[in-house]
Image (cartoon, rainbow, N blue to C red; front, side):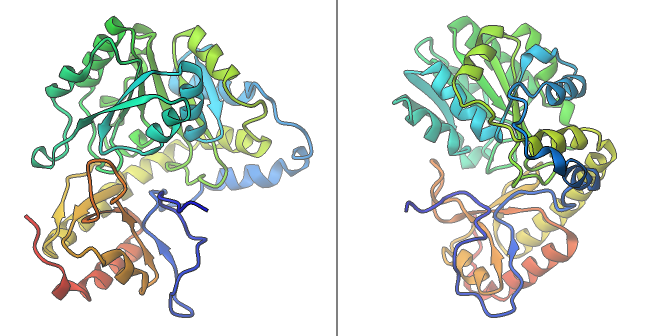
Length: 359
């Protein structure tokens, strides 16, 4: 079987000392855990699980429509955001796809299934991996599909809304479909300042991706959605995948989660405080740290064995060696609860003599 390259692999066998607690910093899940109302929804609706789910997700879509202030007919739900990404590839069948690099690997994996040629716009370390105006040199009419991750994964750096709108406008002129992945947007302190959802009515060539996976700690339930003002695109996305792709449990949990507004507010505060703590500590260890605004942090070290050394302490971190534009000196960690973060720092300090200052 092919090796998995995403975070969150807590299932593979590892040589970890007996009775050592496994702490997963490789997956960027809300450290508050699943909201209580979501847990209650799982239990309260248990008698419904013998039925087929609603293939149209009508009740859930109605709640998403109200939550995002967008017409219900502009919403499509999926088995996680990844399901929507693969539907987009199957529906659009792009000959040429434009990606920034580094970014989420699943975009490329999805378009490869339809034999799309991939072009990269490399984000430069010397610029802090920020997206700038040089992207417009790559926005050619020959590009059929483009993905933007905002904030980007694995850097945690958001793209200014004005730039996203400029890109959307250029793509519209070029007849390019633009997918803006906002799955980590809700972790941003000023999330609305970066989201393009309110402008979707002006761009019928734009699809926005959102997910319950990270912000509501529902990764195992699998639920995401896409937003698009173009009815033809929505219809094509529906036809591109299997029916009943969103389970009864996922639909009920999604409805419950959208009511958890205070939970999201608490999450933003918790992430900001703990992210600032981790960034300051990592810098003191001599690591090169990139200024994330999300719930994960990218850093660089000359110690390529760091991931394996931390596993001895029961800590999993994400090697970024398989990201296009990065190598095995880059690692990503999630921002977790205070106690876990402190344990990570203490464990890294054990290897301080093997960690060299990276400039």
